Image (cartoon, rainbow, N blue to C red; front, side, top):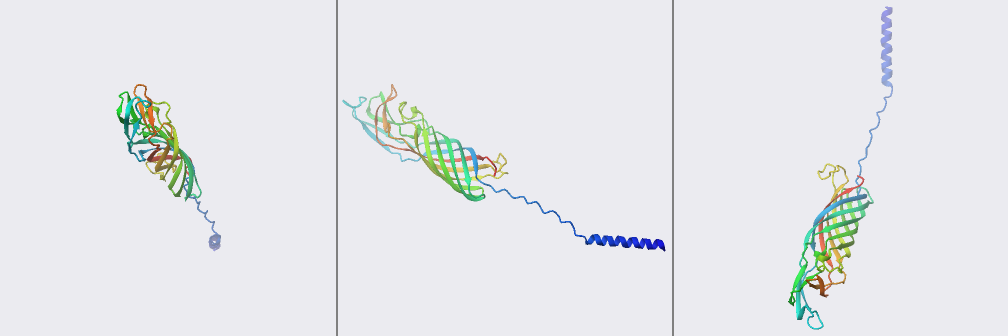
Length: 281
């Protein structure tokens, strides 16, 4: 009997303890850790390369001028010697590199401003815009130095302003431009040519920040961007030694030049580029 009472008392105590434990408040689970998704920003330095196509954007006309020959004039031609020449359109490959810096005022989508500088190789062909002259001595030939064939390279320093739709940036650009070429492609080898010229460039483009899983994103980061851009470049040739030249074939030095019309170098560029932006976000 006593043993039975002890067992009953122990069972009652265990049941009471279990009920008391069930009434105790449970320990709250820790809140989940929130990891914010990084927001892409265009702010930062970048550098890259580009390649594209350039073509003459000027109006080219066939022109002629009279060379004053005979006594008191140019001795390589008789009275009434006339030279003819034509401005031929030129086009070719262009490629180079660029560096720049952007500032985005609102991460995600918003206004982006920046500055960019580039340097470009330019291949407009190596033939001068030659002409011919009726009545000109065989010891001379005519060339027109105003053609774009004298350009070997050009570069720009431009401002950029645009609007970003997350990873897509649409922008306009404009600023300073410069260019130069070799002497033998400008004035028949005349060392006194004005080959270096300055001017301006304007244009626009669209740029896209590649996803990390893109096969073109070889850095596997959000810092690789792809752009397509168009530029109009106008380089002032100045007024020095403008016009078609009559060149002494033996010395390769101009014997006469005619200011038949001052013309700036105008050409358009369409190119694609790849940039690496330092700092992923």
